[in-house]
Amino acid sequence: MNFLAHAWLARGGDDDFLYGNLIADGVKGSDLSDWPMGVACGIRHHRRVDAYVDGHPVTRQILTRSPPGGRRVMGIALDLVWDHFVARELILHDAGDRLVERTYRLLAARSAPARLAPMVPPLVEQDWLRRYADFPFTCRAIDGIGRRLTGPNRLADLVPWLEAEYPALEGEFHRLWASVRQELEVSPTPA
Image (cartoon, rainbow, N blue to C red):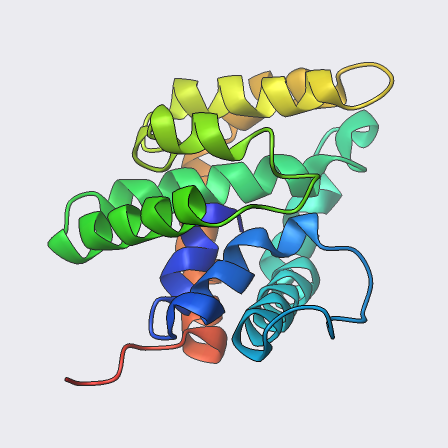
């Protein structure tokens, strides 16, 4: 799962909790004592979601049929593909739009960890979270991440496979998303 999916799963928490979920990929190590308690709880929640998704039967099944040369980076590609499907669902609803605006507000107002700092301004300014609903945009984002990694761009090599597998991935996403939401979604508390 990527930014949008993590935001949706954490939306029921306060801003610190949501922010921790958003920046967790940029935070190294298990010592979170330098972070405010709510942010640290969000980082831990994000990590639980990632572990759950990585170990889920849907994810394992996709890895068994994915191209052998791309298996090491398939998780990165799937994170963005899952955000594509989340974006397609959420941009149709007011709650999704409000969440995107809340996410952008938090990311613009607070500094991100060094690993994420360069990507946050374009993410907000170019409205990536809504644009993930467009699969070609998502594929370009996958390719862009691959260009920032060392070595050959194995993520770009996965794009044709992802395009060919799109219908199957969509069905798998719905099974995975239902399971993740049931296990790890922090629902908003009634006002």
